[in-house]
Image 1 (cartoon, rainbow, N blue to C red):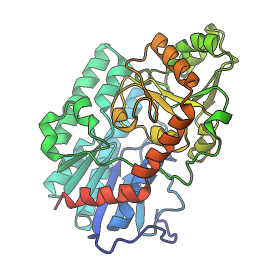
Image 2 (tube, rainbow, N blue to C red):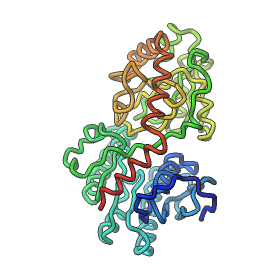
Image 3 (cartoon, rainbow, N blue to C red):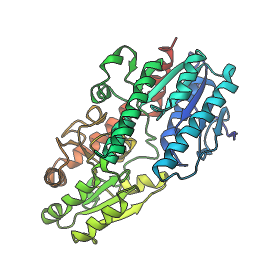
Image 4 (cartoon, one colour):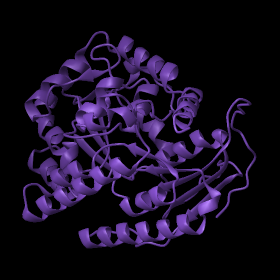
Length: 392
């Protein structure tokens, strides 16, 4: 499918125009992270093709962007369906690369640390490759399946694949410097670029309601899975409500812990205090964030959740654990809050303290100012121009 809309990206007369193929592991149809990456690369390319599956192209993509959705299992739910989808996607994206070998200079892997077949083929074809490190899928598997024999087997297999991919890639692109330490990547320091953070559309994500005019709404946006610590947050709510009687928790997202989260809510008498909104379209997220006084991410492992930047742009302070790239984004007590651990008791105390902070208005303003200064579209394009130049 090819989009044909009017170009609205800035021109850069000094930028060499490259031919780029983005290979993006299948995700949700309305994938804002992939859309953002496409828009970043568009002003730097003469041709941009995106190979993925189930992606519904946004109507404001540039006319030079070609979307190639390869056929995979739609809405894979079971482990074996997910494994089959992964293998099918790798085979079909590899075939696309081989069939269009003369059409691209650079191959970009988005959420692709396990895409070893197209990565190996890119190396064989002598193409430059950029592997984006949003986190470790091996670590996610470990938290999802715990210490089970299946979990241990999958963890070891995926860890080996990720290591192989890092060796094969021309450059590794991290969102911020912290990921080097978090993922123990000292071995690859000479080819890691730590300036790959995406941008936030500050026209769409903006503060429309002052923090002082918002109710005590605590927000969570993300996958309902073990590594995200969402159950810990629900367990913290009774203590929070005891100290802040008007407090409510609003949960946006779906995942394997959905039923467990609802049961825990009921068992703790929190039916009136915890709302489950399910999946919310991305264009509605700014409205939700402007009704939220504090966004909480109690994760055990992370990359750089875009929701952190989006919340800050809306003047919504973020309280999060110091995992992944988060310590590079949030300055504790200045534009958000960092907590040392995510146990229910620590979460409850930290959330109550944040909601009661008499400088919350200043923190809210500083958060929005920080995103505007460092994570605009223009700043991101400039960073990625340098990333591409590093391949020369």
